[in-house]
Image (cartoon, rainbow, N blue to C red; front, side):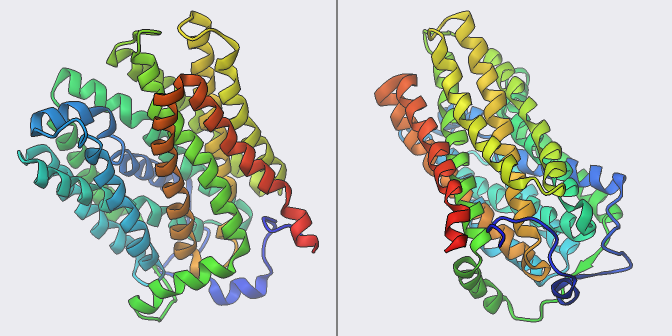
Length: 418
Protein backbone atom coordinates (compact mmCIF):
# COMPACT_ATOMS: atom_id res chain seq x y z
CA UNK A 1 0.00 0.00 0.00
CA UNK A 2 1.46 3.36 -0.99
CA UNK A 3 0.74 6.88 0.18
CA UNK A 4 -1.15 9.42 -1.84
CA UNK A 5 2.06 11.21 -2.67
CA UNK A 6 4.15 8.21 -3.64
CA UNK A 7 6.40 9.48 -6.42
CA UNK A 8 7.72 6.21 -7.80
CA UNK A 9 7.40 5.90 -11.61
CA UNK A 10 3.99 4.90 -12.85
CA UNK A 11 3.50 1.71 -14.77
CA UNK A 12 4.64 1.81 -18.40
CA UNK A 13 1.17 0.88 -19.58
CA UNK A 14 -0.31 4.20 -18.47
CA UNK A 15 2.57 6.12 -20.01
CA UNK A 16 2.09 4.56 -23.39
CA UNK A 17 -1.28 6.06 -23.94
CA UNK A 18 -0.65 9.41 -22.33
CA UNK A 19 2.81 10.21 -23.67
CA UNK A 20 2.63 13.40 -25.75
CA UNK A 21 4.14 13.71 -29.15
CA UNK A 22 6.73 16.23 -30.21
CA UNK A 23 7.83 17.40 -33.58
CA UNK A 24 11.12 15.72 -34.22
CA UNK A 25 12.08 15.41 -30.54
CA UNK A 26 11.91 12.62 -28.01
CA UNK A 27 11.05 12.87 -24.35
CA UNK A 28 14.78 12.99 -23.55
CA UNK A 29 15.46 16.16 -25.57
CA UNK A 30 15.89 18.34 -22.48
CA UNK A 31 19.64 18.89 -22.69
CA UNK A 32 21.62 21.33 -20.55
CA UNK A 33 21.28 24.24 -22.96
CA UNK A 34 17.51 23.84 -23.19
CA UNK A 35 17.23 23.44 -19.41
CA UNK A 36 19.20 26.64 -18.87
CA UNK A 37 17.06 28.51 -21.39
CA UNK A 38 13.84 27.30 -19.75
CA UNK A 39 15.14 28.22 -16.28
CA UNK A 40 16.04 31.74 -17.45
CA UNK A 41 12.71 32.09 -19.23
CA UNK A 42 10.71 31.03 -16.17
CA UNK A 43 12.63 33.43 -13.93
CA UNK A 44 12.32 36.41 -16.26
CA UNK A 45 8.62 35.83 -16.96
CA UNK A 46 7.74 35.25 -13.30
CA UNK A 47 9.57 38.44 -12.35
CA UNK A 48 6.97 40.46 -14.28
CA UNK A 49 4.47 39.63 -11.54
CA UNK A 50 6.61 41.10 -8.78
CA UNK A 51 8.20 44.24 -10.22
CA UNK A 52 5.10 46.21 -9.27
CA UNK A 53 5.11 45.32 -5.56
CA UNK A 54 7.86 47.68 -4.33
CA UNK A 55 6.66 50.35 -6.80
CA UNK A 56 3.01 50.43 -5.69
CA UNK A 57 3.52 53.59 -3.63
CA UNK A 58 5.13 55.85 -6.28
CA UNK A 59 2.91 54.46 -9.04
CA UNK A 60 -0.24 55.22 -7.06
CA UNK A 61 1.00 58.72 -6.24
CA UNK A 62 1.76 59.52 -9.89
CA UNK A 63 -1.56 58.10 -11.10
CA UNK A 64 -3.60 59.87 -8.40
CA UNK A 65 -4.82 56.71 -6.68
CA UNK A 66 -5.97 57.05 -3.09
CA UNK A 67 -4.06 55.32 -0.32
CA UNK A 68 -6.91 52.83 0.08
CA UNK A 69 -6.76 51.95 -3.62
CA UNK A 70 -2.99 51.48 -3.76
CA UNK A 71 -3.35 47.72 -3.36
CA UNK A 72 -5.19 47.53 -6.69
CA UNK A 73 -1.87 48.06 -8.47
CA UNK A 74 -0.76 44.65 -7.19
CA UNK A 75 -4.18 43.00 -7.02
CA UNK A 76 -5.01 43.49 -10.72
CA UNK A 77 -1.76 41.79 -11.70
CA UNK A 78 -2.61 38.86 -9.42
CA UNK A 79 -6.15 38.63 -10.80
CA UNK A 80 -4.85 38.51 -14.35
CA UNK A 81 -2.45 35.74 -13.38
CA UNK A 82 -5.17 33.76 -11.60
CA UNK A 83 -7.50 34.00 -14.59
CA UNK A 84 -4.71 32.94 -16.91
CA UNK A 85 -4.01 29.89 -14.77
CA UNK A 86 -7.61 28.78 -15.15
CA UNK A 87 -8.24 29.67 -18.80
CA UNK A 88 -4.88 29.71 -20.65
CA UNK A 89 -2.58 27.17 -18.97
CA UNK A 90 -4.95 24.18 -19.50
CA UNK A 91 -4.87 24.88 -23.25
CA UNK A 92 -1.33 23.48 -23.31
CA UNK A 93 -2.98 20.04 -23.28
CA UNK A 94 -4.64 20.98 -26.58
CA UNK A 95 -2.56 23.61 -28.43
CA UNK A 96 1.04 23.31 -29.65
CA UNK A 97 3.05 24.45 -26.62
CA UNK A 98 5.70 26.72 -28.13
CA UNK A 99 3.06 28.64 -30.07
CA UNK A 100 0.90 29.04 -26.96
CA UNK A 101 3.86 30.28 -24.92
CA UNK A 102 4.78 32.93 -27.49
CA UNK A 103 1.19 34.13 -27.87
CA UNK A 104 0.79 34.41 -24.12
CA UNK A 105 4.08 36.27 -23.78
CA UNK A 106 2.82 38.71 -26.42
CA UNK A 107 -0.01 39.69 -24.07
CA UNK A 108 2.51 40.27 -21.31
CA UNK A 109 4.76 42.42 -23.50
CA UNK A 110 1.80 44.61 -24.48
CA UNK A 111 0.80 44.93 -20.81
CA UNK A 112 4.33 45.92 -19.76
CA UNK A 113 4.62 48.57 -22.47
CA UNK A 114 1.24 50.03 -21.54
CA UNK A 115 2.15 49.99 -17.84
CA UNK A 116 5.06 52.31 -18.49
CA UNK A 117 3.27 54.70 -20.82
CA UNK A 118 -0.41 55.03 -19.87
CA UNK A 119 -0.99 58.13 -17.69
CA UNK A 120 -4.40 57.21 -16.25
CA UNK A 121 -5.15 54.96 -13.30
CA UNK A 122 -7.87 52.96 -15.06
CA UNK A 123 -5.73 52.19 -18.10
CA UNK A 124 -2.71 51.33 -15.96
CA UNK A 125 -4.77 48.86 -13.94
CA UNK A 126 -5.96 47.20 -17.15
CA UNK A 127 -2.34 47.01 -18.32
CA UNK A 128 -1.38 45.42 -15.00
CA UNK A 129 -4.13 42.84 -15.55
CA UNK A 130 -2.70 42.01 -19.00
CA UNK A 131 0.80 41.69 -17.54
CA UNK A 132 -0.47 39.13 -15.05
CA UNK A 133 -2.38 37.30 -17.77
CA UNK A 134 0.72 37.09 -19.98
CA UNK A 135 2.90 35.89 -17.12
CA UNK A 136 1.14 32.51 -17.01
CA UNK A 137 3.46 31.49 -19.86
CA UNK A 138 5.76 30.30 -17.09
CA UNK A 139 3.19 27.67 -16.07
CA UNK A 140 3.08 26.37 -19.64
CA UNK A 141 6.86 26.01 -19.71
CA UNK A 142 7.07 23.96 -16.50
CA UNK A 143 4.94 21.00 -17.71
CA UNK A 144 6.68 21.40 -21.08
CA UNK A 145 10.01 20.76 -19.35
CA UNK A 146 8.53 17.67 -17.69
CA UNK A 147 7.35 16.38 -21.10
CA UNK A 148 10.84 16.74 -22.58
CA UNK A 149 12.61 14.99 -19.70
CA UNK A 150 12.90 11.28 -19.04
CA UNK A 151 10.97 9.69 -16.17
CA UNK A 152 14.15 8.96 -14.18
CA UNK A 153 15.31 12.59 -14.30
CA UNK A 154 11.96 14.41 -14.26
CA UNK A 155 12.30 15.70 -10.71
CA UNK A 156 15.80 17.02 -11.42
CA UNK A 157 14.66 18.69 -14.64
CA UNK A 158 11.66 20.38 -13.03
CA UNK A 159 13.81 21.39 -10.06
CA UNK A 160 16.46 22.98 -12.27
CA UNK A 161 13.86 24.93 -14.23
CA UNK A 162 12.08 25.92 -11.01
CA UNK A 163 15.33 27.28 -9.59
CA UNK A 164 15.21 29.90 -12.32
CA UNK A 165 11.58 30.71 -11.52
CA UNK A 166 12.27 31.10 -7.80
CA UNK A 167 15.32 33.26 -8.48
CA UNK A 168 13.16 35.49 -10.67
CA UNK A 169 10.56 35.84 -7.91
CA UNK A 170 13.17 36.64 -5.27
CA UNK A 171 15.21 39.06 -7.39
CA UNK A 172 12.34 40.97 -9.02
CA UNK A 173 11.62 43.20 -6.03
CA UNK A 174 15.18 44.42 -5.39
CA UNK A 175 15.85 44.82 -9.13
CA UNK A 176 12.72 46.95 -9.53
CA UNK A 177 13.69 49.06 -6.52
CA UNK A 178 17.20 49.71 -7.82
CA UNK A 179 16.04 50.60 -11.37
CA UNK A 180 13.32 52.91 -10.06
CA UNK A 181 15.79 54.63 -7.74
CA UNK A 182 18.33 55.40 -10.47
CA UNK A 183 15.98 55.79 -13.47
CA UNK A 184 12.20 55.81 -12.93
CA UNK A 185 9.40 53.35 -12.31
CA UNK A 186 8.21 53.39 -15.98
CA UNK A 187 11.76 52.35 -16.95
CA UNK A 188 11.24 49.09 -15.05
CA UNK A 189 8.36 48.11 -17.32
CA UNK A 190 10.05 49.27 -20.54
CA UNK A 191 13.18 47.25 -19.75
CA UNK A 192 11.08 44.23 -18.81
CA UNK A 193 9.21 44.44 -22.13
CA UNK A 194 12.50 44.58 -24.04
CA UNK A 195 13.79 41.52 -22.18
CA UNK A 196 10.56 39.64 -22.95
CA UNK A 197 10.87 40.47 -26.66
CA UNK A 198 14.44 39.12 -26.79
CA UNK A 199 13.42 36.07 -24.82
CA UNK A 200 10.56 35.36 -27.24
CA UNK A 201 13.04 35.23 -30.11
CA UNK A 202 15.31 32.86 -28.20
CA UNK A 203 12.43 30.54 -27.30
CA UNK A 204 11.16 30.49 -30.89
CA UNK A 205 14.61 29.59 -32.21
CA UNK A 206 15.66 27.04 -29.59
CA UNK A 207 12.60 25.24 -28.24
CA UNK A 208 11.24 22.15 -30.01
CA UNK A 209 7.57 22.07 -30.89
CA UNK A 210 5.30 19.89 -28.75
CA UNK A 211 1.90 18.92 -30.10
CA UNK A 212 -0.43 17.46 -27.41
CA UNK A 213 -2.46 14.35 -28.14
CA UNK A 214 -5.76 15.60 -26.65
CA UNK A 215 -8.55 15.91 -29.25
CA UNK A 216 -11.35 17.45 -27.18
CA UNK A 217 -12.60 20.99 -27.70
CA UNK A 218 -11.57 23.95 -25.59
CA UNK A 219 -14.83 24.07 -23.61
CA UNK A 220 -14.71 20.34 -22.82
CA UNK A 221 -11.05 20.68 -21.84
CA UNK A 222 -11.77 23.49 -19.37
CA UNK A 223 -14.84 21.75 -17.94
CA UNK A 224 -12.77 18.62 -17.33
CA UNK A 225 -10.73 20.50 -14.73
CA UNK A 226 -13.56 20.19 -12.19
CA UNK A 227 -13.59 16.41 -12.55
CA UNK A 228 -9.79 16.28 -12.28
CA UNK A 229 -9.81 18.40 -9.12
CA UNK A 230 -12.43 16.17 -7.51
CA UNK A 231 -10.87 12.81 -8.38
CA UNK A 232 -7.08 13.27 -8.16
CA UNK A 233 -6.23 12.68 -4.48
CA UNK A 234 -2.51 13.38 -4.91
CA UNK A 235 -3.34 16.72 -6.50
CA UNK A 236 -5.75 17.64 -3.70
CA UNK A 237 -3.24 16.94 -0.96
CA UNK A 238 -0.26 18.53 -2.66
CA UNK A 239 -2.23 21.66 -3.56
CA UNK A 240 -3.40 22.12 0.03
CA UNK A 241 0.07 21.53 1.50
CA UNK A 242 1.55 24.17 -0.78
CA UNK A 243 -1.36 26.60 -0.32
CA UNK A 244 -0.71 26.64 3.44
CA UNK A 245 3.04 27.07 3.02
CA UNK A 246 2.71 29.72 0.33
CA UNK A 247 0.25 31.63 2.53
CA UNK A 248 2.94 31.65 5.22
CA UNK A 249 5.52 32.79 2.64
CA UNK A 250 3.28 35.59 1.35
CA UNK A 251 2.44 36.80 4.86
CA UNK A 252 6.16 37.06 5.64
CA UNK A 253 7.16 38.97 2.51
CA UNK A 254 4.12 41.26 2.67
CA UNK A 255 4.91 42.41 6.20
CA UNK A 256 8.70 42.16 6.61
CA UNK A 257 9.32 45.36 4.55
CA UNK A 258 6.96 47.17 6.93
CA UNK A 259 8.91 45.87 9.92
CA UNK A 260 12.27 46.77 8.39
CA UNK A 261 11.08 50.30 7.53
CA UNK A 262 9.57 50.82 10.98
CA UNK A 263 11.41 52.78 13.72
CA UNK A 264 12.57 49.44 15.15
CA UNK A 265 15.03 48.98 12.27
CA UNK A 266 14.69 52.17 10.21
CA UNK A 267 16.03 50.66 6.97
CA UNK A 268 15.86 52.58 3.69
CA UNK A 269 14.31 51.23 0.48
CA UNK A 270 17.79 50.32 -0.76
CA UNK A 271 18.55 48.43 2.46
CA UNK A 272 15.26 46.54 2.20
CA UNK A 273 16.13 45.64 -1.39
CA UNK A 274 19.43 44.17 -0.16
CA UNK A 275 17.52 42.19 2.47
CA UNK A 276 15.36 40.73 -0.30
CA UNK A 277 18.52 39.73 -2.15
CA UNK A 278 19.59 37.72 0.89
CA UNK A 279 16.27 35.88 0.83
CA UNK A 280 16.87 34.92 -2.79
CA UNK A 281 19.44 32.39 -1.57
CA UNK A 282 16.49 30.11 -0.77
CA UNK A 283 16.06 29.51 -4.52
CA UNK A 284 18.84 26.90 -4.36
CA UNK A 285 16.25 24.56 -2.82
CA UNK A 286 14.61 23.81 -6.17
CA UNK A 287 17.33 21.69 -7.83
CA UNK A 288 18.17 20.01 -4.50
CA UNK A 289 14.52 19.06 -3.97
CA UNK A 290 14.29 17.74 -7.52
CA UNK A 291 17.15 15.32 -6.91
CA UNK A 292 15.66 14.24 -3.58
CA UNK A 293 12.34 13.52 -5.30
CA UNK A 294 14.02 11.44 -8.02
CA UNK A 295 15.54 9.26 -5.27
CA UNK A 296 12.07 8.51 -3.88
CA UNK A 297 12.49 10.59 -0.71
CA UNK A 298 9.55 12.91 -1.32
CA UNK A 299 7.79 12.02 1.93
CA UNK A 300 10.64 12.81 4.30
CA UNK A 301 11.59 15.81 2.18
CA UNK A 302 8.08 17.23 2.46
CA UNK A 303 8.08 16.86 6.24
CA UNK A 304 11.43 18.62 6.48
CA UNK A 305 10.23 21.44 4.20
CA UNK A 306 7.21 22.06 6.43
CA UNK A 307 9.42 21.93 9.51
CA UNK A 308 11.75 24.55 8.03
CA UNK A 309 8.80 26.89 7.50
CA UNK A 310 7.93 26.58 11.19
CA UNK A 311 11.54 27.16 12.28
CA UNK A 312 11.81 30.26 10.09
CA UNK A 313 9.13 32.05 12.10
CA UNK A 314 10.51 30.91 15.46
CA UNK A 315 14.04 32.22 14.84
CA UNK A 316 13.32 35.99 14.96
CA UNK A 317 11.46 35.52 18.24
CA UNK A 318 14.75 34.55 19.93
CA UNK A 319 16.05 38.14 19.82
CA UNK A 320 14.70 41.59 20.62
CA UNK A 321 13.02 43.33 17.70
CA UNK A 322 15.27 46.13 16.43
CA UNK A 323 18.53 44.57 17.62
CA UNK A 324 21.40 43.57 15.36
CA UNK A 325 20.87 39.93 16.31
CA UNK A 326 17.18 40.33 15.50
CA UNK A 327 18.04 41.55 11.99
CA UNK A 328 20.46 38.67 11.45
CA UNK A 329 17.89 36.12 12.58
CA UNK A 330 15.25 37.77 10.40
CA UNK A 331 17.54 37.40 7.36
CA UNK A 332 18.20 33.76 8.26
CA UNK A 333 14.46 33.22 8.60
CA UNK A 334 13.91 34.63 5.09
CA UNK A 335 16.40 32.17 3.57
CA UNK A 336 15.04 29.18 5.54
CA UNK A 337 11.41 30.00 4.73
CA UNK A 338 12.15 30.47 1.03
CA UNK A 339 14.11 27.20 1.02
CA UNK A 340 11.29 25.22 2.65
CA UNK A 341 8.51 26.65 0.47
CA UNK A 342 10.54 26.21 -2.73
CA UNK A 343 11.40 22.61 -1.85
CA UNK A 344 7.80 21.68 -1.08
CA UNK A 345 6.69 23.23 -4.37
CA UNK A 346 9.06 20.92 -6.27
CA UNK A 347 7.94 17.86 -4.32
CA UNK A 348 4.35 18.68 -5.21
CA UNK A 349 5.03 19.22 -8.90
CA UNK A 350 7.07 16.04 -9.13
CA UNK A 351 4.15 14.14 -7.56
CA UNK A 352 1.46 15.51 -9.87
CA UNK A 353 3.56 15.38 -13.05
CA UNK A 354 3.76 11.56 -12.93
CA UNK A 355 -0.02 11.09 -12.64
CA UNK A 356 -1.02 11.34 -16.31
CA UNK A 357 1.02 13.04 -19.01
CA UNK A 358 -2.09 13.90 -21.05
CA UNK A 359 -3.48 15.92 -18.09
CA UNK A 360 -0.20 17.53 -17.05
CA UNK A 361 -1.01 21.14 -17.90
CA UNK A 362 -4.47 20.94 -16.31
CA UNK A 363 -3.03 19.33 -13.20
CA UNK A 364 -0.45 22.10 -12.99
CA UNK A 365 -3.09 24.78 -13.53
CA UNK A 366 -5.23 23.48 -10.65
CA UNK A 367 -2.20 23.05 -8.41
CA UNK A 368 -0.86 26.55 -9.08
CA UNK A 369 -4.25 28.25 -8.84
CA UNK A 370 -4.96 26.64 -5.48
CA UNK A 371 -1.74 27.60 -3.78
CA UNK A 372 -1.60 31.02 -5.44
CA UNK A 373 -5.00 31.81 -3.94
CA UNK A 374 -3.61 30.58 -0.63
CA UNK A 375 -0.80 33.10 -1.02
CA UNK A 376 -3.23 35.93 -1.71
CA UNK A 377 -5.20 35.02 1.41
CA UNK A 378 -1.98 34.82 3.42
CA UNK A 379 -0.98 38.33 2.34
CA UNK A 380 -4.36 39.77 3.31
CA UNK A 381 -4.61 38.07 6.72
CA UNK A 382 -0.89 38.53 7.38
CA UNK A 383 -1.18 42.28 6.86
CA UNK A 384 -4.09 42.41 9.31
CA UNK A 385 -2.20 40.25 11.84
CA UNK A 386 0.82 42.55 11.70
CA UNK A 387 -1.31 45.70 11.96
CA UNK A 388 -3.16 44.41 15.02
CA UNK A 389 -0.49 42.33 16.76
CA UNK A 390 2.88 43.59 15.49
CA UNK A 391 5.51 41.03 14.46
CA UNK A 392 4.62 38.62 17.25
CA UNK A 393 1.02 38.44 16.02
CA UNK A 394 2.21 37.87 12.46
CA UNK A 395 4.57 35.15 13.68
CA UNK A 396 1.76 33.24 15.37
CA UNK A 397 -0.22 33.32 12.13
CA UNK A 398 2.84 32.35 10.09
CA UNK A 399 3.64 29.39 12.36
CA UNK A 400 0.05 28.11 12.41
CA UNK A 401 -0.03 27.60 8.62
CA UNK A 402 2.85 25.10 8.23
CA UNK A 403 1.74 23.41 11.48
CA UNK A 404 -1.64 22.78 9.84
CA UNK A 405 0.08 21.50 6.70
CA UNK A 406 2.27 19.16 8.75
CA UNK A 407 -0.74 17.90 10.71
CA UNK A 408 -2.67 17.12 7.53
CA UNK A 409 0.45 15.55 6.03
CA UNK A 410 0.68 13.23 9.07
CA UNK A 411 -2.76 11.77 8.25
CA UNK A 412 -1.69 10.70 4.79
CA UNK A 413 -0.83 7.07 5.46
CA UNK A 414 -3.62 6.57 8.00
CA UNK A 415 -6.16 7.76 5.47
CA UNK A 416 -4.82 5.45 2.76
CA UNK A 417 -4.77 2.54 5.17
CA UNK A 418 -8.52 2.90 5.63
